[in-house]
Image 1 (cartoon, helix red, strand yellow):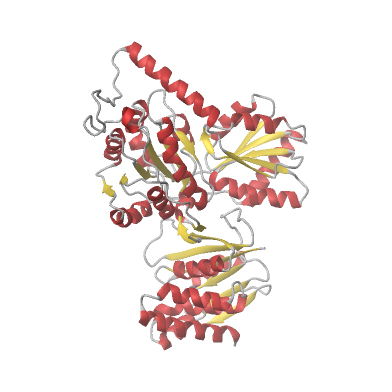
Image 2 (cartoon, chains in turn purple, red):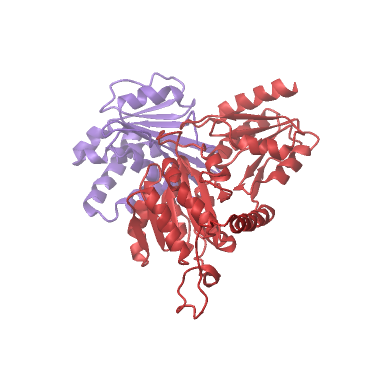
Length: 178
Length: 360
């Protein structure tokens, strides 16, 4: 069984980082995984995206036309990638920055005001972790606790950031469940 | 040591250190600059030499110097950078110095783009530099295989006193995959005192070792060429590496593909199999020596109607596939270039249409 997640947003939103954290979590669970960044001629503040492919067996093509799931952190990302998501996939929408729906009835739409939640916790910068947490809770792509542990590992050396992101993990989960 | 998640470029740098290589000269270029970034931090930790040269031309001759002095040395670059090194590469090959070069190919020709490509196949396998020389060329399809090939490249280069090139593409360099590193190689370049300028005092010898690539006497240069050819012939016999996919069934068509492209093809093959269309794949792991005999044998299977060379270039390896098959089966090409990578769906469409055209 192979699953793909597209993470997309503005450069600087921590898109590549949450992709890496998910890839780590999948590896911890003994799965095959690839993390593929967009490294095209992008500009600061432009779009950034990465794809994480998780599988039980050796992964073939690293080129994925249609991902299973999408985490969209800004509107251009939703507009661009929502039509490509496979039926029954999860589309997570950061409603703080995206005032519209995915426009699909065959997917599981999760609306989370990730940037607002992060702001209320003290820093906009943890919006990515809110989104990752909400996505993981809803999709069950890896065990929630594995993801949480990988967030911990990622920020172990920065206690203040870690504390903030642990709150973000909890709030993200709550937002996805409600 | 367990698996760690690592970018291809960083894993390549680490693999070189574990192969006992402590000399790295390079000039940064996308999409492989992370190798230099990684090694600028790592090499000083292990008392190695990290040197950012003023250009790739300088790199090529720093390699010549270090290798000629018996040191394990390597560089990494991407297409236009490798082009600049090709003059020095020819010198290194002629002087029979071992060295390892990694080309993380980007779209060309010209300054081109920065996205993945396999369009330097000709450059790596047929020359690039001038004169009758050959590189041993290996092409990994995963980050793990890139690590294994880098670690194999150094002993191979020293065994044959020949430059070895690892041919990756932008994706191999940029993507992260779990990797496990083999144990450190505990070897030293074993035969270096026989030929390298290691110093007569050091090796307690009264004979000079001379490393050069200038032979003005045509008879002497011809002799050099014969020595090189004999070496390449042995390499052709001894060092072919390849992998197969779905070749234990009666496949109707045989794909020949390498590197990232072969992974896309493997997914296409799975999907075609589900539809009842059996396609096999032979994946060359060495591009020189090319698995000529193996491709010929695989093509002779009665069920095989045709072959397809599928590449991220406008048709380069296809010439070697045609040569290998010796006219016994039709050979077609499919590919994309310039940084575009075909999707499995595009491969299926191309393969199905060429099969219907040729064999229906």
